[in-house]
Image (cartoon, rainbow, N blue to C red; front, side, top):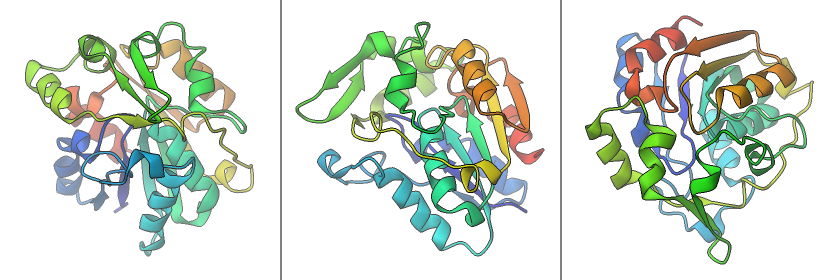
Length: 237
């Protein structure tokens, strides 16, 4: 059985996987779902988050594992798993991009996101340059992230979303064919996504080819709106 390492996206924490983790474990898969530094329950000050801080924290997790893992990155987590794959290619069995940023060498999340004119995130993001973080307008949260979710999931998210450090978002990643490029990649696109538009998702997995593309007729948060379907896709790999 594969060990799954689940990497959350912007403003979220490991809490977002709470429906997925028990389903994967019931199927016999060990699961690790960390809070990235400064997010979730992690108390790292945002001012201490450098461009590679999140990736380095995941590399430390992989260093403690005996066997290669399946790295799953949601949204901005896609940037993180690409960085980790470049740094620890022997520790990664496969990369799964869950409606995520699949960046080419030299691209940054901010650079790519700015070209996604259909996204509801950019127009509703509040950036505090002095404090080095960004937040999302409260009235846009449901539409951008949780369009297929129930009221309870949306209420939970409103309580738990936290400011996102800017430093990693504006920094270009560096990946090579010899490290990142040798690891099998799967992209799970979400066709009702309002945070990363379906067109942008297609553009990214078209530029960086994947062995498999899976489509879900869901929002940006299928771990909440369709956990059983999502786990079915993850365990079929």
